[in-house]
Image (cartoon, rainbow, N blue to C red; front, top):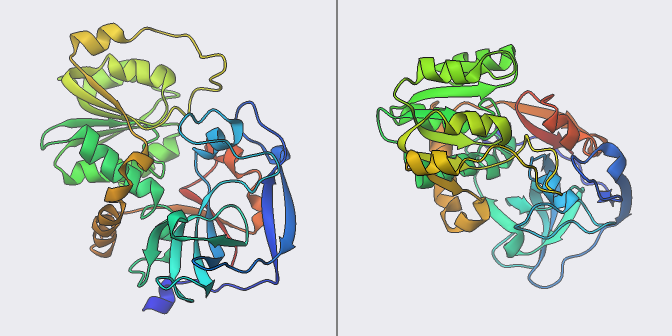
Length: 345
């Protein structure tokens, strides 16, 4: 069974790397990167060499490249693009990591990475799901959804939960977890096809195409008592509209600001202080790196849900490192049909 979960992979003799060669001012594009290669490096004492199999593409990479992240330093010009990935240990000088172990962590956009335990977020001894899932629904995206919703959103049976980018790698998990908690779920997404995906695949009660539907009117219709939990990944006008639909004592989980084109200078918009005050809202920012102690337990919970058929996910996998440079801009354009990954096998 395990062999079916793990794809084939080669072990090339040189290490191809995607380097950041120009600092983007907004969304990174292919022209901001270059592909180079180097000789393989051997691990020092306490390190191990990982052959990457799946590279992750994540919205946060925009901030890491453009130096607007605010909670981690930017990728240096000429450096390997920071990225999460799933790979296999091929050489080790660390007693807790042996050849054949699979790991997920800060491995970068490259064929190989020499790392230590501090770069590993998950050590995957016996995969219970396809290996690619550990870079998405069982990685940063799924755990962000699980911990952000449960620790900050705190849904209870009967709550109405609103999710932006509801068909995305985070939002799709939030919607399913909220539904399993007995909540009424409303998903906002940008195409009619993704509305159908939200309803029929991820189980949302209501799907709304925010580009074509009057969102404020739709929320008033489908949540007449107000929104209890708003899990927002985009900010901007969607956030402004959602705040004005919140119930008293509602909880807002701010997980992303994907709709904001640039933060320098800071954009000016509607003032939301009055909404927070009069509705007595709790508005919390969620950054996964503040909750790393809870990561392993969350992976176990999500893994069990997949095995039990209670958690569905989609993946958009391209083959070849040459697809990496343009993948962030494609992600922000909404061109992906699931968790965006680059397969290097």
